[in-house]
Amino acid sequence: MIITTASTIDRGATGLQWRIDLSKIPGIRDVFNSGQDYDFEFFFDPHSLSDKVTIRYIETQNLLVEDVPVGPQTVRTTNELVPRIRSKSSIFCDFDEERSNITSAFPAVSPHTQWINVHDGKELIISDLIGLELSGTRILADPRYAWVLNFNRCNDIALRRFTIGHTKAGYCMGGVLRFQDCANITIERCDLFGSGTYGLELVDCENVEIVGTTVRECTFGAVRLTNVSNAAFRDCEFKKNEGFELFEFDGRLDGVTLQDCRIFENRIEGAILCFANRNGSGVFVHNSSCTNNQCAEITSPSNFLGSFDHESGNQIVPTFWASNRG
Image (cartoon, rainbow, N blue to C red; front, side, top):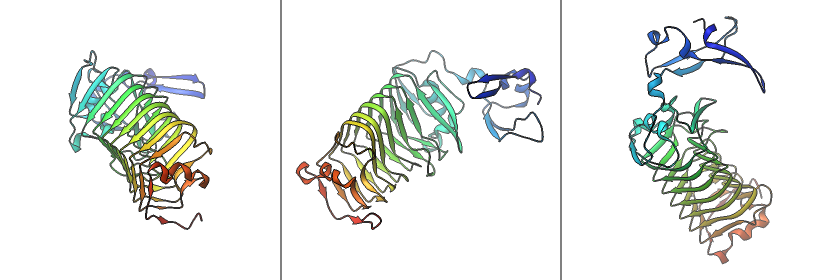
């Protein structure tokens, strides 16, 4: 295809950008079928092709859902879910396993969603909304290096009774749930599993409540918090995770609490609780247990052991200590 009339070259902040609008190619609807994937390679010189890009062709009228009601809704596929992600919405996701893959919704969008490229596919970003409650069965992602759900600059977000994870575990990039610059977050009765990095990452967030939730079988660690205030983990389980540190705390922490939690059967090279900047004064552990874990130490630096002492009703019972850190 010669796409001269469907493309422009603009000077962006990082250099030249080649923008292509495939919908402007004459006769494209005669070539493609709606809902089908097609592989593209772009070039100025046919001897120097771009990396292969997979694009799903969707008729314009199917791409966005306008005037979506904000009251309680039920959706049965991720393709129905993504266009309905809006402020002041309550959505029940009645997904069976075949219809639970969030990546299959690409390229459907809403005013608050976009897709970004990751190493092995697409990642959904949810941004700038206020008031969204999602509940249901399961949400999965195929790309191992994508976060399953990634929220930016959102307030009043609730996720309830979900199983969320990857179809295959990855490594180094991508996790289950990520929130950045968000406030008033509730995660209730969820099962987070099989990430490439962490089950949950919070960056620059406040007023977070995680209740009755399990984080399991992650390959980098369970939880990473950076600059977080007023975050409570209550009646949660952290089990069968692997990686470097189970909980990694960085930046300013204020009012971060683990209450009535169970930490068991994890295989960690470093510490159960790792304070990257030695700023753990805002982290509290109450009435929780740490059992049958393989780790180098409970806390790092080790003088933070007071955050997991018996006076707070905590138990440190038979644990296998790795020999790699004394």
